[in-house]
Length: 106
Image (cartoon, rainbow, N blue to C red; front, side, top):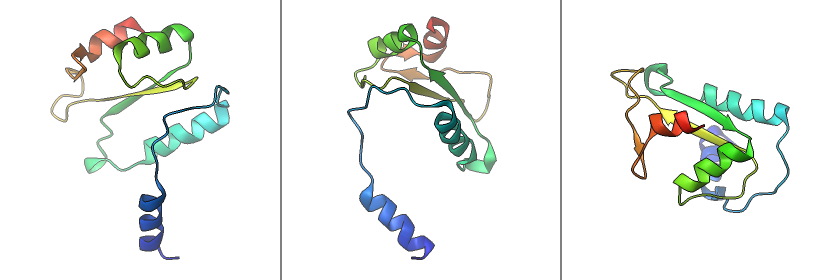
């Protein structure tokens, strides 16, 4: 199968997971997922995101209290994007919550 065929197959077979196993993911598997995220293309290879791995019950409970999309995954990856014009100025909002406030809560 050529590359174009693989891409089309991937798009056709994708699905949204809304129920997760309660098993904790292993560090090796988590590191592979994070590495794939770091290798994913971004405009001009700017890499304007920060990925936070949340494992503690307290951090996960805080995120779940802020989002209507709270699923029962035992580990959460919180991805924040920085504006292209200023990587230090994080002024994004999610469901009326300031991201700086969310990070301080964790």
